[in-house]
Length: 297
Image (cartoon, rainbow, N blue to C red; front, side):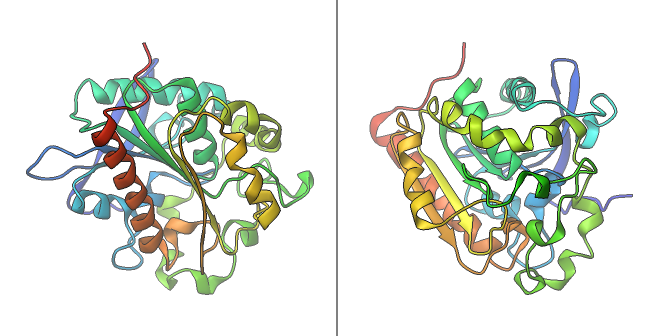
């Protein structure tokens, strides 16, 4: 049995095209949210990835609420409550449709504040970019993406296996990058990677440019210092901004002393502060100009 979420975070269920998606939700206790952060976890993880408790200050949900935001961490299609309905998972395009429908269900029942800010890690970063390209059913303020790039650093045969677990050294890196209790809590945040999701892993570099070209909001990419799956040499990172020609702003940054699972490491709090600082900048731009990417029809 999984550990109940801490006080202030509750489990909810959203409905999307006949599929139930589970999620963790944290909201400001006495005021309306300034904006809503939608967090999308990576392959082989769950929504609990964003609510780490191995070290004080690690949880994105706790920090977001403290700064006045609602934080909705979804179990992506094929994880959590949708596992029984989607035992093989969904393709990236299908996940985009399902998540956008789930957000429409959420937006009809909750105050979003100024709009939605999507934070995605690894496969969740692919989904964040795809959802933005496909248009969300709510005003979109910006994207923050970590653990994903556009050029693989490993050969195809070294990508995550059909079992969904991939290679430990690529997913985590050196033990010293994570609080010791991280691995005691692993059963609550690790899950098998669905077959259909796993089958598409190698296709991302070929798809990146066409998806990125349709993103029309500010985007921030973060690469962990010890990222193993994706190339992050200077020449590769210099290419990134030009691949998002419609994005009004593209930042490419590094997080020192971090491994791939950046939100579970010692530097999780620092990364989350930087991500939410970027949201603050997106909000300031929205307040100054009144512009967001409008909701899909």
